[in-house]
View (cartoon, rainbow, N blue to C red):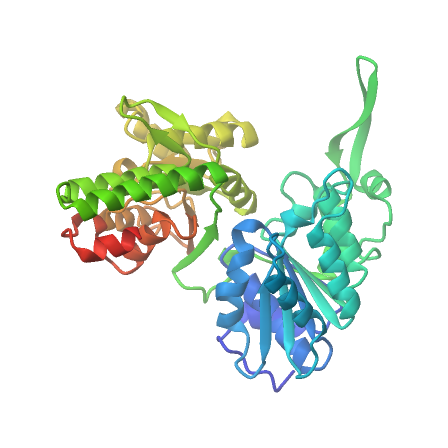
Length: 488
């Protein structure tokens, strides 16, 4: 594709992988978070469209990132001379939305690239009945055989018997081109690769049966618990052979391999509010506006208190007038765990509230083991703090996750063992954010640092992050009309 003009200049590794892979019927982008696998996928779609190979693309991604494809990634990277229409899946099939879907699927009046972006969760079957999203995706591709399907964060289809995996494999059979994207193709064991590679091509690994694949690359023993017998994987073998097979249709890139990446890489993961959070948030926001409009309680302290309460609801809890904490069902913890599965090596996780820090520690301990996580916040004993830092900085240590409160751990510490920093929640104090970012990005850091913000759309999360990105210290703002607009 000599005539292909990139909208955004690729880094060297991106350009090389794109040149090698764009025309192949299937390919895996095993690129660490922050190294730009999404851009490669979009330029692949663009090149195939310009070559007349496809006119349709189906993107499948987790809830936390599928909206991002439509709002940010496609507009940012798809060349200007490619006319396109992109539609995001929604479960509410209104007459207007159904008309938009039909137009996307069958309108061929102009040569336009038609892109449907779906969240993978919508493809799961309920009571063995195929979901509306699954039926729509399959019909969409049946009407458009010249298509490419991209599965972003493909470990979401790693379980062979899961209904969403079975649906995505049906989608694969109707796709002319197929791509999978993930920074960590193996989250628990090499068996995770089977379904992901089956999506690419049943012949990719040379096995049409999961059990044959398991028998080749794992060591299995039969166990008995009571009256139940089952096969347990106790080890792995022939992994060099497996790696050689993967190299034929994949690229693996770590940040440390990319010399031209920027020093800091910022990304967001969207987290939808649960119905319980939405209801409480709406009530709290209405109370905040009533206070502002009355004029009697309009002080800086009051507005910051309302921001704090809205922020707590978004994080997944609320504190009553007696100081008692009430947890609220939320999606943030699951999204955090998804990100941690993608991360290579150590990571720093910042959270504003002590309640969240303790909840994060509990969740990470259950997922990765107690030795994998340590907390550094107001309640951490002074005598333990330096030991935690030293252990985290030790590359041989099992301590993988440093969970801290930016106000406590965001100053003075050196945490360069990590090159990924996750903000479970943000302080609205600019200095705290800047200081906490520099714990990993300082002398001693030899890699680019990726910063991941968990953000609930159309909430105080976006307000705070916008203020921080614009270098505005929300905590020090003088109360005025602009604050009312922000709360709105």
